[in-house]
Length: 148
Image 1 (cartoon, rainbow, N blue to C red):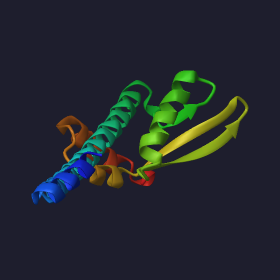
Image 2: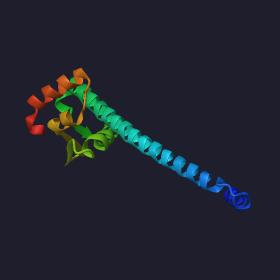
Image 3: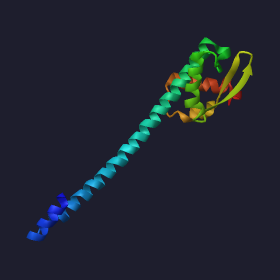
Image 4: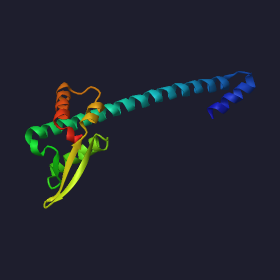
């Protein structure tokens, strides 16, 4: 409606208001598209940071398990709710990112899941890990070459 009014004024008075308004709106559209591209790039960067933080949280959790229950650090029982939630987190952030695999073993109490981390892939995926985490990853890569 606004543009129709400008067209009418342009015809009546010989002005270029409608053309100027269209040019102004096109420029605003170009600016908005550039801002959108910047926002999308920032969103991608932040998503990658969040995913890296999630991977680091998973690794800190595994390190904690290694300290508390070293012989069972990579084995999870689905009968234990806490272990099941932890396994879901590890699958979501390590397995789905191809940083680990899971083997399922059926036993008398249900299922036991064995997490098999790909330590080299994990180290490569972390851009700048926490120094303590980096040294632990290095140690795990040397200690557990069979875990990939």
